[in-house]
Length: 169
Ligand SMILES: [Zn+2]
Image (tube, rainbow, N blue to C red; front, side, top):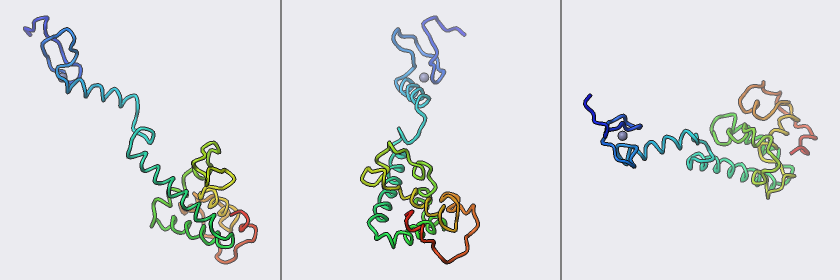
């Protein structure tokens, strides 16, 4: 090596380059890439900072709130049928997003401070997943909605719907 002291190594690509007093990297692109790498180390990609993830999560919550709206705008007598329908839809795998909603802990046991999770921001309304969870627990399923949707519990005998279930929904 015959490098003069006026040469240095780029910390990003490892290339040698002529030392200039204020330059740490060999090129603007190495400087940029290195900064991005640092940034990524500090903030892993998740819903909080990835536009795609945030968008996906938004769509899920949006659909969940539309489903809750549908449920609560129905006469109480029809609500059980609707809940049963969406549970079957989620179980069938036909609608992955409904499946995601009904198995999502953040919606089954929502944080009461997260008002956006509740219909009209009011936690006295259940989220759709909470309503489905109550239904499953007080119906012949006798299990949480996530377990029912994932097929982790045996099918209950078909037929009657208990009266008290109607009130739970
Ligand atoms: Zn470089």
